[in-house]
Length: 395
Image 1 (tube, rainbow, N blue to C red):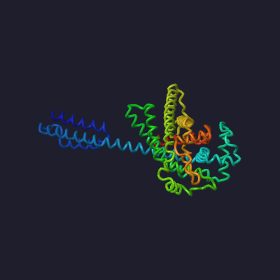
Image 2 (cartoon, rainbow, N blue to C red):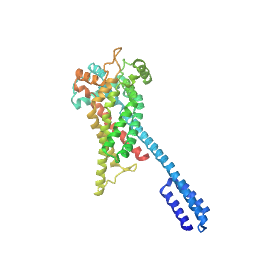
Image 3 (cartoon, rainbow, N blue to C red):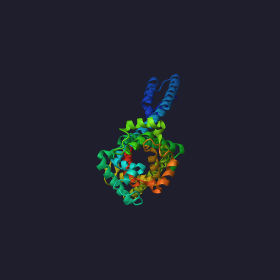
Image 4 (tube, one colour):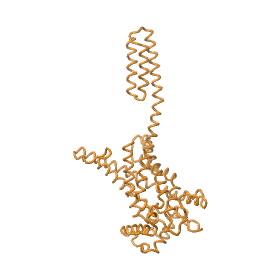
């Protein structure tokens, strides 16, 4: 009985560390101490002592397991969040740097202030080519050239500072909230579904819009400045003047339109997840049929898989932007600087929508659409590519 009891205790202590690696060193030490104090073949009193110390060892092991495993889960969760922050912030930064000139053009084409400038230039009468893709492309290219020749190359990067200050935390917050939200909602619902993607994307959109609206406001005000009408010296001066003349509420102008824009991010994430899943299934079927592409491998993934990520991200952004674009125009109008000492022309989401329709027609709600698409589609592809690459390497 003595030998069998001690052997059972020893086997129990040997199996538990294998199942719980985090406590294996502690359990092994306790097991060795137990064996030293209770060698096999002793009398009944020693057996009783062995059984008592075995129970004590198991109790200590159980206590260690209960206290250490939640800490490990907590640490893993924090690590997971920071990887999303890093991936989203890096992707947003790279995309913003590459596509900044088109962002400047898009903002000006969305603004009513640009309309008065356009009528006095050789860009043509307002409305020419308004419903033509080629006309939009021509306007975009001409405005790029005009900004470069009249205001200099640095003007193509106006607002880049606040843009980066907004893009990096915005993308970091968005991707981190979405990634961790997806994990939370998946555990809540029991499996990953389209509802999980919707819930995660809506949560991420609201959190991101609320946290970063003041930064986007400053970026818009800086980009809308033209030579001879400079109102702000730099981003800090812009913040100071907004707070002085419009108060803290002025920093959140356009927030309602940003909340409306949550729909764009939601649609984009859902479509991206669907396309990514569909393309992965297609690759799996091709692999089972012996049509695997054994081409160049980059970062542990086949080049075809990376191309799929780029295509899925670009397509998702294109569809989402085309559906929800008018909110971009409304948001820009709400954020643009008041003219002179006059009160703001656009005061609310509904009022702005009705005023734009009344004064300029439906076409004005799509001003700058081509420049926007030329910027956001490659931007999204670059951003999601960087995100997936960093998640694959460190996630």
